[in-house]
Length: 252
Ligand code: ADP
Ligand code: MG
Image 1 (cartoon, rainbow, N blue to C red):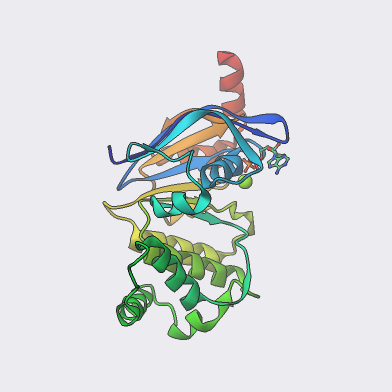
Image 2 (cartoon, rainbow, N blue to C red):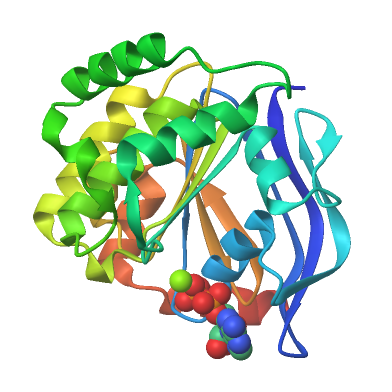
């Protein structure tokens, strides 16, 4: 069961139900895109999966390779192999990227295990070279005064070093300039492979010009109303979201 399986998830925010019996299965090795109009609950899905306290899961299951992760704390979910990328990542002044990554890797080890620092740096620099990230970058404080592109570079480096089983990326890409978009897509394309599933949440299909998804899901009013191949993204770009609304209205 190498899948991230979301089953009938119901999520309430500020006493309003946002996700309604949301279900989705993301197999390892695949890239799935979720698209949908603003306010439909895409970020709510990402935040609920991350374990954000404001997003109350009233029912449903999330199984990571068969293990229910909803009972896990935020850091335990990360250790189980879930990686979250948000458009507005936190700044951590005073903590360098290198130290942050070291701490994150140390946290994954058992209590009496010590991270091998030399090996860690060797691996980090190899991965940075592969991703064409300047080595000086890791001495900067995490996201402190970063440009959009630098935040994305940091996100991709984190992904490379944490080797998640499933990466959920809420790009809300209205804020991504072309440079940042390129950094994310080149990074994802280099890192994707049989060991990782990627869920790419996006409003515009633009990013899908650079990352080819295995599947595209259209989300509307808190659940997926249509799934298809990459051509579905182009159809949405072409026709907008209104026809989906009409289709849903006809079914109701
Ligand atoms: P999307 O990412 O698809 O644009 P969101 O998940 O951000 O949609 O929002 C879905 C709905 O939930 C919106 O009506 C939004 O106002 C509401 N919502 C999201 N987060 C909060 C919050 N922290 N407090 C109150 N309402 C929220
Ligand atoms: Mg959003």
